[in-house]
Image (cartoon, rainbow, N blue to C red; front, side, top):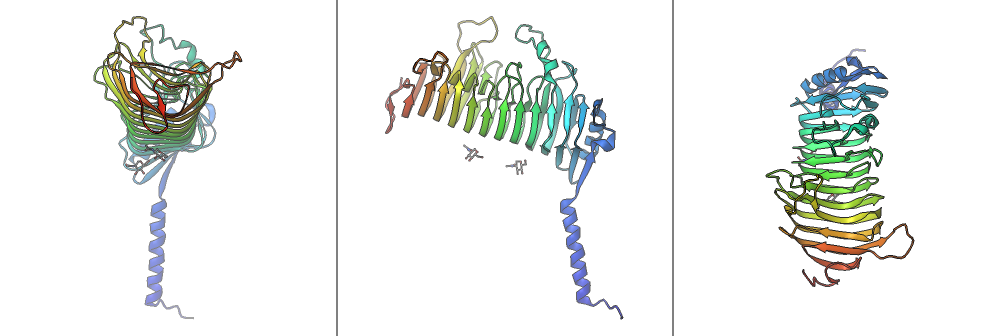
Length: 411
Ligand SMILES: *[C@@H]1O[C@H](CO)[C@@H](O)[C@H](O)[C@H]1NC(C)=O
Ligand SMILES: *[C@@H]1O[C@H](CO)[C@@H](O)[C@H](O)[C@H]1NC(C)=O
């Protein structure tokens, strides 16, 4: 039979070819597998050169590049993965990355990402900081010349990043540190370290805006999340915290010209067996600073020592004077906060006499005593230098008269 290519058939073929090309292009993701760059999954061979080489190739390629850590266990020395890159980067951790089993790494991080736009870190794998080797040498509380231990993952000057479905275990210092970043989302991240491990904050951020933390499980030795100066537009929901020191704004006021912490929302989260749950902490004496427009809403607290605490007289060193904090705290709402307190002072609002807190709002608070001595002690509130209002249920009785209808009283 004679084969004749009619014009309609030709156009159809052409169309099919074009659409399959377009499809391939949309799916084109260059994958850079660290094994192809010499990494060995024996948990023993340092893969840092392989990873750095894979990173350079990925960063310089066009389109979306995937840096793949396949399943297996890889030992990894400290690495700095820097941009700017030519396209989006997906850092896919399917295996386990293990830090060197020594206290120090000779640098302040294990894995740092910097100057990158459009980064995804995912894969279901594990970052194991091997912190047990480092924690005993954390003497920064006693030794002013101490060398800070390395942070598991630093993001410096990164924008539009999503970190999801990864686990960080036993960091030597903080698990994640976000510095000078924009639009960073954490989702379904698991963070674990023992409650006695020092300074193992889950996620610490500073000078960063539009940071979202969702549906993440954080149990560690220090703050589950801590917000340093210049944290703005921060939204945390669905966080399970414990053990740990809670979600903490601060400490602030330790350095001059700190930008404010503003527009922070913490919603639908649970704190179990934590030292604090919702905390704002500033130093005294301090430089000037501000904390404003903060909302804590729909929070469940189980057996926390200090469910609600504003602490403006924080002085970690021994040379504290009687001078007070210069950090102004305003517009802080606590709404629908329920559960149990392991100390009788469930609400402790201790503001600065120099710049009293204003606009503190307590709405529908029910915190029962859950002390170990078994009597029916009630919880109480302590407030100093704070102006506020209370609405709805107030257990413990609030420092301000309560009304379901309107605000009644200031101090
Ligand atoms: C934030 O980053 C994500 C990528 O993680 C991006 O898809 C989104 O467009 C960014 N949002 C803004 C407002 O830039
Ligand atoms: C925070 O994020 C949650 C869920 O992602 C959203 O429903 C809520 O409106 C956000 N809150 C604020 C104050 O942006």
